[in-house]
Picture (tube, helix red, strand yellow):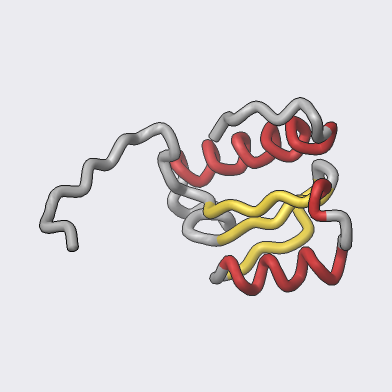
Length: 89
């Protein structure tokens, strides 16, 4: 998931935790995070839900500063390239 963002001191901390959670979810389909959306604030998991909308709503309630927040879907291989072929409109 790594994308560098040096202007946000919380980003690296949140991304490290997200990487650990995602690795766990990829290795263990029974992980409580597998297939869920995870919300992190300042290096702490604060919400796990079935939809990104639910996570975002909860993050907005918990932390008004979006720079401290991180949301992702656990159990996705973010390094995998997926090519989509088909007609383009």
